[in-house]
Image 1 (cartoon, rainbow, N blue to C red):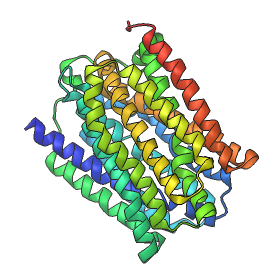
Image 2 (image 1 turned 30 degrees about the horizontal axis):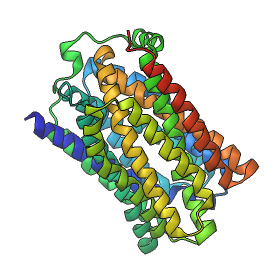
Image 3 (image 1 turned 60 degrees about the vertical axis):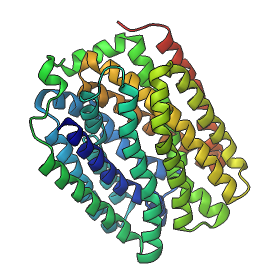
Length: 388
């Protein structure tokens, strides 16, 4: 029965992230048509990250105390409503408000799914468990842009948003019907810590702090590689929505395919060195993107980027699952994803400012250098202590 519930969690996560992936290649285009600049695009992404960041630790901690199903269901409902709202946006302020609401729903989906999977993860198989969830996440995000580009080219931009809404509703029905409300969580077997108590312990633990810093640092690349890529490809290669979706899809599918082998590798070897290797790859790719002279070179670089991410995510996920046994999986995954949102927030503002001041190309290079620096410092923290 536990395997069946795990399958439902993974399937609903895949479906909901497929809907999100659908709008990735078209949302920056919609914002630009409404008059967004590079900095404004950064602010739109930051609005999503801000509400998500604020709510993540709160939702995670409450799910340890009161169960996870209600939060996951509410998040999926919000995703469905967001898909209906985007086509009605007629100004940048509308987009900002919708994205902020979108962030509220996001705080209740992936982190809660991660907590569910962590609860069911056997000792010694943390990397494998996180790899399975990452396959669902990145397969959904990876297939989504290709579908979104096709929908946009065939039936217009609003159709892609309505597809996102429909998929989120399907995922919601799966959770409501198939997941029992009383499914076991860490809160059932261990007394969950209060949020501020848990945060205080995390801050004092250099090992946990290093993991969270690495999570934040490696997420800085998301803004230039997702938010700015459609603009770059439109300017350089006059790429269609389908071609833009193909680049994003190949990057994300390379990530998804690599999850299982690298997840198993993280169980057999020190995941910290896999983190360093993956971070070096993604930083190098970021610095090389402005030198891409053709569409096919750019596609190849983004496949390499996906491989670098496939090395990083199961390693970081495995480290986080082990830490979650100290604080409660919902709380740890909430804070773990809060670090991710903080990285996207910082990256969105930095990349947006660099794009306006120095040009679109430099935003890739600067973010690449910053990612490597932060990750190297984070690994020093992780390796410097074994924890409390």
